[in-house]
Length: 385
Image 1: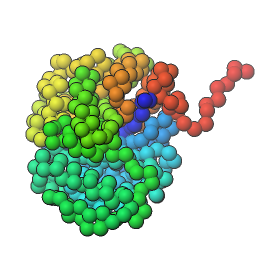
Image 2 (image 1 turned 90 degrees about the vertical axis):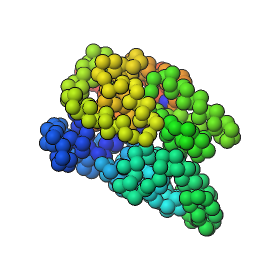
Image 3 (image 1 turned 120 degrees about the vertical axis):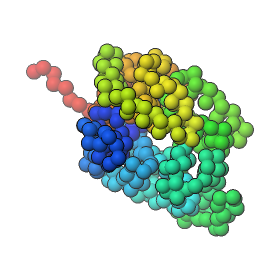
Image 4 (image 1 turned 180 degrees about the horizontal axis):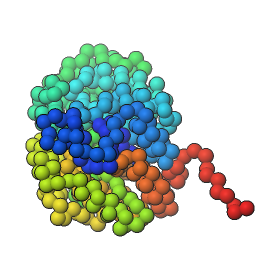
């Protein structure tokens, strides 16, 4: 099992800061921080294409593209970027309760044909009821997972290319059909830490994706999902979602992490923690528990830093250290059974190069990554004459 590397597409904006441009920028007119965030890069097509091309050049397999109120639509954005890249796949996040499962099956089939099979699916059930209500979804946490279970049953049934019937609580489908099934079938990435999420992952996920908790906690999750999958007669692979700050020396990496903290005043952290604390997501609550809202003890495992989670929802931890130290921690997770590493960093363009030119060669030398990462023509080095 080799390490498979993916990068992140910041369709909500990017920059040299952890401060959310929507929470504290001019788009939020009620914020006392409006207009005070510096170094923000809008997610226009030109900038996103730069990141996508860099990721492809450096050897990343795919790009996770998020979903939500503050992001550009993942389907439309990645289809546009597919025209600017050749091999890069797109791990498109979407919420299953917001579209018909038969339509989703049709969309994936079209996407695969138009891009030559470059789609991966990230199913996001949703852990924030306020966010769900913006899109007209009023189900509670556990019923959302029950609906996702039915949704994925319908999608996989429709992918078979024959009329498919389904009678459930949330969906009733008669003769559901995708005339031309997707080829290949896109892999389904799925996350969730609650008791309601585990059985759905075991039944439907190709890759179970967890946020970057310390290795001991990740092992517990892997063991949990594996045991559930065995009962379903299935095998599930595993992935992890992390940020990264990798530099030529450990001191440089930690200096960068500390600089990111300099933007975060106590009021900013308190406001973010209060908002994140209202989330129904069990995974989000586990992220918050790693640091408790305090700057005091943010290195929660050697070279694993929880500073991002002080103000950012979702993945709240980062691999921080020299290229070799970051590779060490990736190798530690890999030994537990983690195959897919979905990474990001601020800013995403520069951090892709730090990781791609620093850590990927380390992983290649250890036999964990095939092909050396970088694609394209070799670089010719002058012989000194």
